[in-house]
Image (cartoon, rainbow over the protein chains, first blue to last red):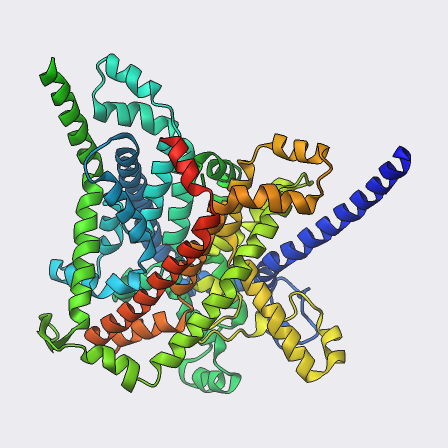
Length: 305
Length: 295
């Protein structure tokens, strides 16, 4: 009797496991497909692009596409803009949001609950409602065509989803026992120094989560930067991509006419894909390095508790 | 005895305000004032564009949106329809995937890292291009053939093919939009104590029962969080036609007042929807008790 139950159990378990892995692999495929497509297409030569029998395996690796992509993007110039904005904005988010989150978690002051509700409220309001008055304010300050509208708000706990980061830090500090701070206070450590030299070093996991999300979102952002920055020389890297895609998508007839006028143009869908890959490459590398700590960080931060 | 205590208290309060002061400045200058300005804009008419001079115009902009603008209302309905259809799917898909990933599987780290890939590309231009999704919400080339080979499709005939294609494209989009939700669910699932499942197992509960009686009640706050996140995300997505319309109106046609009115109609609706979601889900959520226990 018992043996029969056991055997049946083993069988269902095996089937269950097989189904589980099939589903995982299938879903993985959905996620990875565009990447493979991007990588494969980015090394196709013009001949392969026009040959419909060549889908997955290019006849030769056309690395020239990457050189063209890097040149068309003026990669080194524009990556500099992107890096400046991303690094400063991320630093602003970490500094301001940990500071504010700590204030909301540890201190009881009149209006705290109302103000924290406001933090959640700021998360709910899409930037599109505020963008016109913000544009007005920044243009009065003369900040249009500078990176200040993208950077300064992060130092005040706003900017791209700043409310979320305040929320993350607040949740983390709520879960932190306050013995350390009490001990520091007894030893005569001021509140600011307590925060900087005791609290910040132990909030590594929340800082890491904030850094990754903030870097990724700032790197990919182009709605606000498109509005505040009109000067083509000051654009950020992702904002350069639409030009390349527009070029790549025009039909061969138009392209032929264009070639007649402007000489040889080498931009096609393969170079566009190579350019795309170059744009996401930095955050991709960052993610590969920090991936494990990031997942652990999210679990430890207790965002969802 | 009384006085130092009071001072301590006052000092504590001041320290609290000190810590939130940067945020308070930001809140006033980058949120409150713009919010009110935007509301005023939506009720006015610009007399001089370059100097931001406005004149009270009543509800002209709002009546224009509802009565005169032939583009806005159909667009708005599409966005609402899409959000209402997509949100339950995205949330349940991501819960399903998170449960799969939380099981004892091989290469768990690899799968987890991979499922977060969509977040890396975010809702940025890159992802739009890779999924071949343009602003009108039409999906083209790339999402085709992801899940079913084209060879099978040709047997089914054009009509069935389109239907299946549409269906698969939707699923692909759902999966691509559920990165953050998966991570949040995973974090929530990690917090459930293993002993609960063990005792349920001893009482011969099936997996199915365990899901409904243990997993779902405990992570219900995360479900609420994810529903709200998904709604906001889909409303502020850059592939969203209304968002694009607001951008066009404001920064291409320079009709700031009308764009402001439209964004307020839009925001008002999101806000109502979120309140509705809270009212619907909150009674089933255990969030309140947890918050109370913490304090």
